[in-house]
Image 1 (tube, one colour):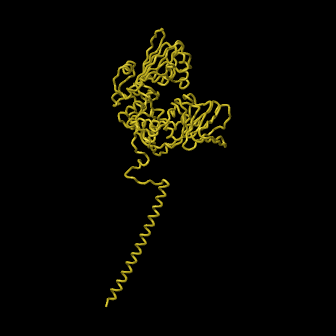
Image 2 (tube, one colour):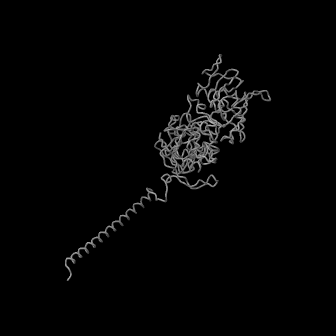
Image 3 (cartoon, one colour):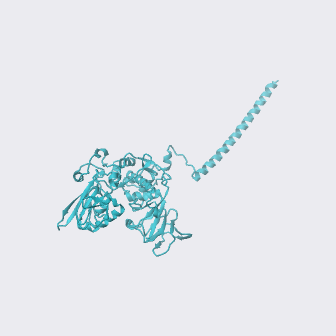
Length: 522
């Protein structure tokens, strides 16, 4: 006879096992249901773009910046786009004042536009639609509302048909704002800083250069633009900056894949010293040395990050080389064998001959223009030989020109012009270049000859000689192109060819500075 106690215990155990099985089964059902719901939620989030699938080991930075190899340097362009790091600074909307053909004026006699897609023109409360390719004309003599807003459909561009840049009509991203004034129409292009930089980089440095040089240019241009945004130079027009050398040249050459890559891959990056932005000046070509900021801009004190130095691998090797005397500068320009970064550049050395007669025809106007800008830098000699700021009188015949002062870099900072009726001292490298405008005289340089409204640079020496007809002419021998402080673009190009990275290039030209990613909002 079975033991009842054992039978009762076994029954209880059987019931407990059955209960546990039921509980486990219910838990499995709940887990499966939860996983199913979670899967549905994840799939929906992925569809909406709120999450990304994990694909191997990577960093957060690689999520937003394409790591595709740049093949454009080998002549095989990559069609794969390079995404931009999303920074609030690069997405900031800016307003660019557009100049007329040849950057001659900020006021347009008429404005002609057409869109690559449908265009909406808004005047006050009235809106009018135009199909893609339809030319829209704003003429002087007709009355328009104070401000006309022109917007193209998403993905389109606006072509400014009344302006020519490099034998083409430029096309613009973003919106246009046209305002009628007594002097003419003003045209403002509103777009993001990133889109603006796309068309600054190629206008300032050919995209045929190495990518590291283009990146250095992009960071320079972004930093310079931030500085411009913090000024009020164009507030009277309702703009942040313009499209000429008064700010930075914008859309003189159209954007391309390489300019977009240079901007996108350095998104948000600027040059700083400590916590402060620096002013990232740049120019075409050095003469073998760079000038200090004080020499170029005639500041009261030195600018710590803009130093005069030799443009060689070891900056410090030539930092003490003093070219402030005429003899030292002549020797350097004609016979120095230093292997500088700019040595092979077209504008490394140049020369021009200007007749005293042709110079006399335009020098009064040039002096007057400089005087109106800053009278303290155009000084007239009195009977005692001292120079003072006073109203200008005509120069008469030009009899002599002499370099009065050079910086240690060799840059001419003071020039004395002797005329039959007046003697004037011209101060600052820019004024010197403007007053000695070559006019219609040919400037000879590495690639041939050209004509310019300014002397290529203020790094020159000159001699007054008599030509075959017995007329006084001035033979000017110079080096470099541009103001001469900050980053030499030709030097940066050569450094990139030698394998230097863009941050190395920038730290070379801007002493003691760093390149950092920083969001800056005006």
